[in-house]
Length: 187
Image (tube, rainbow, N blue to C red; front, side, top):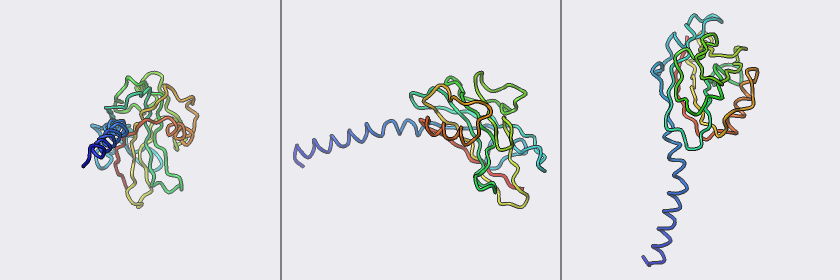
């Protein structure tokens, strides 16, 4: 290989490393939970609509948020709900960038366990807070996708009456990275 060819190869290698370094850091953004496994337990199952669970949102922890993160958001979504558009079980945003975990049952509005300044907006159950799994009897097990978003803004200019679709639009417009866990539940 000539010196000119070696210089080009070194330049291209350096360019690839510089361009992909931010992506590599974002890939380390991780969501874990002491409460979730492959299947949801009765703790994360709704109490109502024919379901008899405890309706407790799981403990969640995240780490390695990308540089520039100014806030976080958490959602729980069931893409398998027979609605044509899925089902939003939890929508929580404006979590301060200094927060890296949520306690069990943080989705219970009456306990006030979410970080100060955070907003739990309306779910497809028609009210704010965590609403657990409750798929139709006999349907295939549904996927429940727990996602934390690292956002480039301190606050989304939305309130507790904001629809999941509106929050989702704003999350996607302001997301630096996201990390997810999937658990299943059927009955």
